[in-house]
Length: 198
Ligand SMILES: [Fe+2]
Image 1 (cartoon, rainbow, N blue to C red):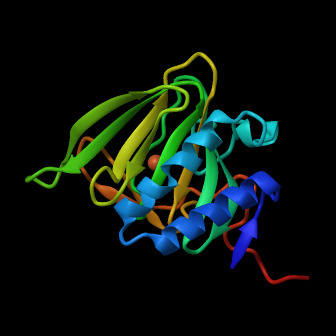
Image 2 (spheres, rainbow, N blue to C red):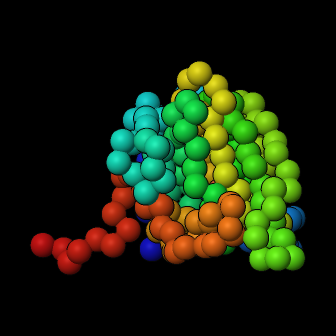
């Protein structure tokens, strides 16, 4: 199963390039290193992501008007935009897959958590991200985080992760107690469990 939800030459060219680099890489870290140039170029270009994929979503799995828009999805790779209105923040969550995440519009603060010895969550790092900044995410390092928009305008980040992130069951966390719950964010524009075709 692979679906170009945003079926354009720009998205196809990017995804095909990513798949070539993953096939040639000998580790997730090596793959991320190989993908960096094309990911940086994608974040720098302002002509490929239609306005609708940069819009908040009033009713979404993330809450707070946060919109997660699928651009491409397969079981082993997904590309999506995450739209976070001013002052809104995601739940603390994990991804269960490696990949790259970068900022396309606005600014965000990212808080990264680790499991402490007592089973609770400890804040390990806080990063401020500006437009064009991106980071590599390789679980278990950096996999549990929360992002919050700090710009007066809505922020848009681009996620490239090696699972169908919006549709897999992963975890959301209570940062105070460390308690986790099953979490599936979904996508605004894709049904994770389509019913039988009519
Ligand atoms: Fe995330």
